[in-house]
Image (cartoon, rainbow, N blue to C red; front, side, top):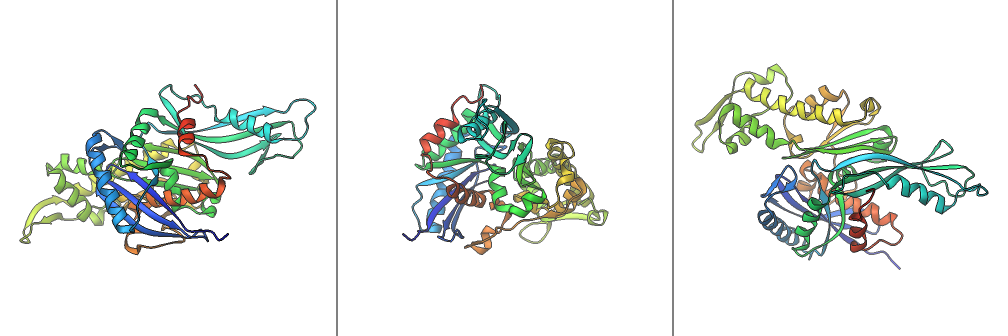
Length: 404
């Protein structure tokens, strides 16, 4: 029987924007973006919901725009979640084969996997992802399951992502009230990495940084596997607020000045003279020293990038051979590439979605990297699942008091 195209939808409820991306997965696994629905977020701070009613109204508006743009009725989605409460940790489970059983069986590997997933987490946390990194058999690393091989000790190495259960449940509740079903829940930087990185990048070592309005998400891959992930509750809105405090400009004017006149590079040549905003008649409405403006921007963004660097395993940045990949709306700031290079000392890239067609002007914008990454995540997960578990089974496992 010929394979049919399938529709997948990714939702990102961010601090600055709420957006849905509708993608069609072709029989040859190529992805075509059918439409994007976006609205300015309200009721979200640092990636987390604080005014449920406002956020719900924004999501409903974005959903209607996405359905109109794609000309489809959306029934289920992949949901990105973020927030500083979400953490990623590595944990290894070790299982010694019983005497008289010299060959590794599926049950032995599953025992090691179960032990690896049993990470001690706070009582109010639930696990979001248990991601297999690799296996070990008698101290030798294996990239695939060692079932059928001779050995005595099997180990499974996992990257486990967990976060506060009630905050994740509220995001799920919000989506269900549209009403939509949730196919899966994905930590935002893991979704972003599906868009930003290919296999070669992961093998050579790559760091993905998605810096949005209220958060900076990151995912580090070394040797082909995820090594670290997390979220820092700082983003572009904090830069705007700093400008507001230094210049006494209204927040909206500070944002406009940041976007149209700011530069984060620290290059003295870019900080000469005065930055101006003009009114509708062409007169200078706002005048600010470029040196003051650019230094304010640079200080906050440099601090943010160094916070990411401090969260990474010690010395791991030296193993990043493919480079640092920047996404998110704030990554569009002039001079941000130069600043990132100063902090990390690695090549800096702005990734574009591979093997994706559709709305040319929109899907290449780094602001949509996470939502588009959700489409690729859906494709990969479906390919790996022999019989995909239903949503309720997924949620039941997710909110089982794992590791407590």
